[in-house]
Length: 444
Image 1 (cartoon, one colour):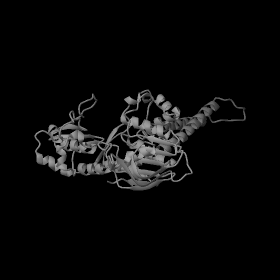
Image 2 (tube, one colour):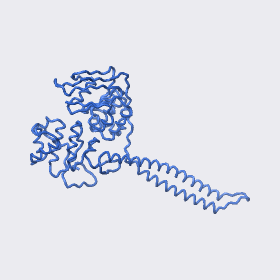
Image 3 (cartoon, one colour):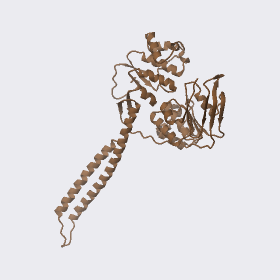
Image 4 (cartoon, helix red, strand yellow):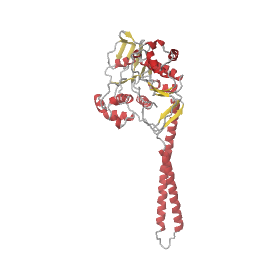
């Protein structure tokens, strides 16, 4: 839609399109300058109006853009693009790395806007901000009115209808094929009987037998045609069904409880306490979600559990001899091929690659160096590595960034089926609602 690729077909538009995230070439400038570069000649009162919609203080405009938080940068860029005249905004995964509170602010803002296309894997976000779904299926592209949940409900109904129809057609095909073969066999045998010679006491009505044989052969041909129609109809089914294969995780059980104990606990950074005291414990099969604003110390708690040196106040205890599997939110250091990655991490290569295959990797992807993969593929590499490991506790730090919706559902189902002990940081509210047995909310 931006004219960057060759394509077949036509794209007609009577507006200019803009892409988010907008690439800022020089971030070492006041934010107001970046706003006015993106939306020239815009009046100040319009900028202030947009900031008020996002509940942002106007002082943000007079701070250097590179000193703003990730969430603040996103807000500045969004209001700038919406302030442009005669433009249609293409918004690409705006919620990655945003905390839940900032996502909800973004939801409130976008609900007041008309005319944009958003790509997102966040189901809660999509349900709140969109009124149509463009679904890129295996064999076609369709547009449906409604939000993600209504589209998913209708798709599930269609998929189930096609599965039932497919099963019925297969039974019909089998029955018709058997009947057709029996009719053809009887017809052929009858024709042979016409030409046989019998003793003088036996009489045979060759005309009747010939008529019956012809009738049975016609019946056989009719059943063949019906069979072919059923096969043709069956061939048009199931093409757009996404087949999520079951992932497998085998957690190690530990008789000790609690596995982790945190009491009146606070993380310290440069002698400053990051959040109010918290207390909780993690027992076998608990799935603990840690939520809170960006920069409040969620990842620091996870790093402390995996034995990183982190300053803290309060009580922190972890059971001895626990095997821990960790998924980092950072993918920058991933490199090399998948075989070397499996060897370096001491995991079974065949199991690791089987998990990746189930998450949508192709043979071509297996030959790609990890550093050249998409961010979503890199995240899948980390998750596949973790679920290939047997561990007492799985520690996952924002595992779902860039992960597509179907794989998110696949991971949810795996966790619910195998019940690993899990401590995770995540901003996907739907995932948290489905998976977490405890939620720890960090507050300043």
